[in-house]
Image (cartoon, rainbow, N blue to C red; front, side, top):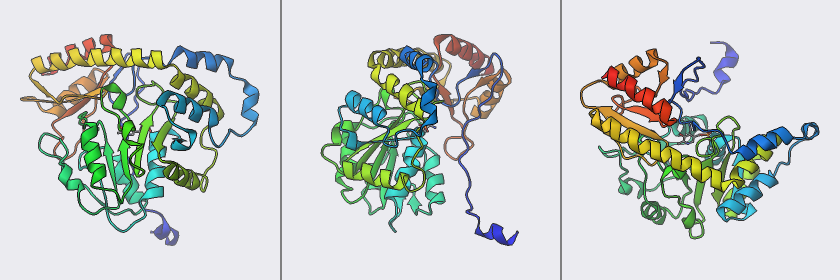
Length: 350
Ligand code: PMP
């Protein structure tokens, strides 16, 4: 090892699902939305004034923050925006988790939580989910330096009701509790109504899933003004201009079009219902999903074998080689046509 290499920050990076780009592929591996963003986004793109690129963007992202405030019924000082919810979550970890007690998040959840904890040298403990992948609330009654819960959880697709979140908040009045609601619009219950009573609650959402804009990279957080200010102080301490000028305009149009948002969600939930039923009929155990994906396991055929067979046909789903979930498959809900092709292939595979 070179002398200077000893000073490198040593991290094991997060590994996202692969992004293949093959003609005719069916991509059901990274929970993207199969439908396009609101037509108003396309209109904003066509009309975007190139001259705006000469200037730095507004560091407060005012137009986007105001549109989010309007749609979700919040004030500007309760909203933080970042470059995807990964950026928002990373900023939240850096801002709130500087204590000596370990932070807590479930053993089976979004694997980036562990990566950020390691990157920022945050001590952490990962209480095990129960056998059926539900959370044991009592695990979160212990002393801690913060809590992170994905609701609905990924990759399990299971969601917690607002009462369970309230209970966890009641037992944790001394730490920041982050609820990652990346998938909440697909049938979960948002903790938004709890914001007025809990100053230590941060809710994180994204444009990547329900708004069909994973490529634009916008995420946001809702919380008490003191939390939002603390996050902005940290953000302005390493890179102020993270939200680029076009994203501000396109994101604003997407969030204003609540009608289109709702229609897209309904289509995906409808598809999810029949795909789940079809998979059950094929002998799969299907976890009840509140997300835009299903988490399934076959009684006889190993998950890895199914994954490989589908992959050979350019149908990409996700298999995690991890303890407790290595016999499960995570399948993003695509269009009806994509899911028909997928079901024909999986029927053949088993
Ligand atoms: N949270 C969860 C639970 C996720 O699955 C993802 C998507 N990988 C994210 C956050 C981050 O999504 P994005 O950065 O695209 O908003």
